[in-house]
Length: 119
Length: 128
Image 1 (cartoon, rainbow over the protein chains, first blue to last red):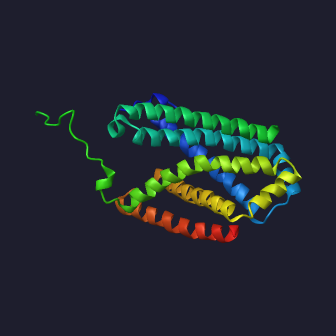
Image 2: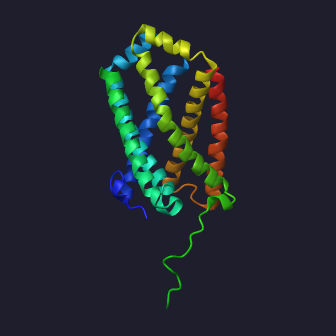
């Protein structure tokens, strides 16, 4: 049995809401980037776009949304498949190791993104 | 009334033994693309980092994206993004109580898969 101790908001309802709000933010962000790229951009326009405070805040918001969204998603996937029932006791070890690895990757993504935006 | 359900009853959720309905395929693909995007985000962040590092970095990204392998990787990430987004929108629609029946679920899955296929082809044409 998998307990919800590692879930994001420690409640399924909270995770459900966070997953939707972060998903909508990410969708808006990728649509915006897609619209900017579709006509082609040169270096100056690209740099100028990411130099504005509004775009930096939007990008950071998208990054933080990604962190929450990815954690809830990877948690849901790992607690469904990396379980004692499917894999035996090593499923528990594998799941926790996988979740630690995911949280490290998420941490790196956020720090890397901040570095790109303000470094 | 005496319950005849045993605590250690066997569980038959061996997915390999079942024929999956289209809704299950839509759901599994939503998960698989989510995991793929989590990995693909490293590629996107790397591209953003390089492209903003200076005019030379931007040019090197443009040059890199000319190669077939790079285009294939970008198409893969964009395809995952398209499918995951449409499947996510389907979830939001269903959260509002639309298409929650069996027929609605099947129709929703078909719409998401068909619309993704079209958008993925368009994205491929745009990338090449």
